[in-house]
Length: 115
Length: 116
Image (cartoon, rainbow over the protein chains, first blue to last red):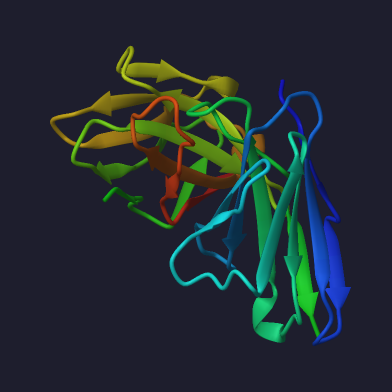
């Protein structure tokens, strides 16, 4: 089956630093990748849709300068949390779609803790 | 706009008992519907999906769900719960549009507890 790798699985950083999270589709090419944020005991909230070779589309209320998304290849998308603050602490999950309108395959998530 | 409502944030069943997790959707057109499972500190795994074919959908691990348009429901069931089924379950909906990226809207999740 399709595998999506997300790295790192857990990161702890100081307030004010930037953190990069990688999402890779290991055995398929993904034209589209999605980034979600999950608060404790809450559902997944879509942050942005990432398309290879173009700018990401952000959902309403998500700061694009705060959450930088780069989709440089058909197998890799990155999310950079810039100048992280404690309120950015959360579980971030990516997903990848082999074809448009296809099933999304999810990464294992990254737990970010900002001190 | 689409939305999903999962009734019951927490469901507890005995091992071997029937599992029923409820999901109701709201959509202007018949949507695509999904059930995902999430184990602690992990991503989501697709259990099953409905994409306008058979209304009774069978998924992995013995789960199945039935699409009922008249009730706008897509409840998840399993005849006999196993301890390994303990996890968080999410119902999700997406518009039935092919050729474009499918944006999923998730419900708030239901935590399934299985007791001895």
